[in-house]
Image (cartoon, helix red, strand yellow):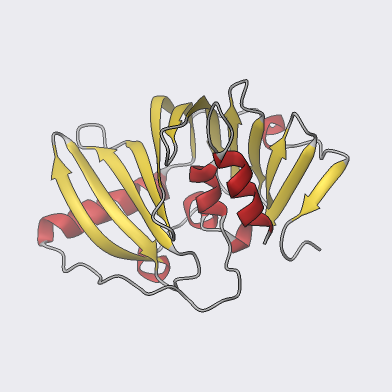
Length: 226
């Protein structure tokens, strides 16, 4: 499976990893679904926290800032990101990490700028479709496993309700600003990747060219490429 090869290559990158973002791109390999965790029984306060998270994503139209990513073995990468709904996202890793990840609204392209190779996947077949959609219905898409509030932050742990993508995603919000500050991905093998966001600016209008990629001459096609 192409995604497995990419994960292996990027997690071995000495100056950083792409595993966290690729975990969000992972598509089913066609095998049996993973075992679902027990859905949490939420208190009224926890239900309100989940609703605030859903409202945040539904009201969000654009966002940009900087990120720091820590991989399963402590590897660190930094960079900048841009998000524009519906469907557009750019994660630009700082050198010497060669990766650039762009969603143009139809496909998610993972571009190795050093080797001039790229993989791309239909956005509709990745969990990013939920984050980048104008309207998010958590009841249809995700199972809530845990909600915690501590030290001014609230975290919500989710998994794919249909278990097409094994693993768990935890999103962390600042209670004062109600802004997304971090997400933590634990993949189906138990590998943990943390992405922290800083210098956030919402309501901006990113240059449309940021979400366009010149496809390298060497291409590895993702699943179901038309």
